[in-house]
Length: 226
Image (cartoon, rainbow, N blue to C red):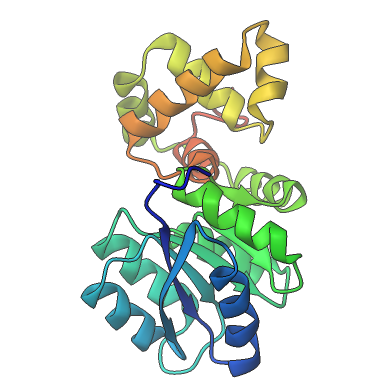
């Protein structure tokens, strides 16, 4: 990363001092990251984001006073430009799906390698979602298991997108990468990336993970839509 690029401002929220210490060392060891604060519970995390500029929050999901899911929902509602990466010990649907619906742009296990967490910070700051492929597939299976027929939402989506962009949304809903989609559509990866960017911007979505949820919950993807 270029030296004149403004550092990514990171907040760590975890009720375990040992975990905060490990994350602190990780963040402080990277010149393109700037640790701007720490929080021991969800209330402290929300208060910190309200009083200082934070780009990315590393958010433990199980904390006292206010849990990480509620804190994530509050932060992403009040500070749309702030990204949240949910961290948990458990790779369970009870944590994954509520965190994503609350607005988290990433979901990682606490035993992830340091470089994975650092890369995730950079990726969500750049506007990408970070969820392990296995989790994305489970997310698709979860939302597709109860397909929606929200015709009003589907109509709004169709009205907002060009035919090419709508087709791109359906491709995103498969959970495949831009490279996979590009190969399937015989397009360049750069072209697919551009279309994906347009879809997210027009629908007001933070990342492609939220696009997957929207596509299935609105009914434009799945048995009723595709």
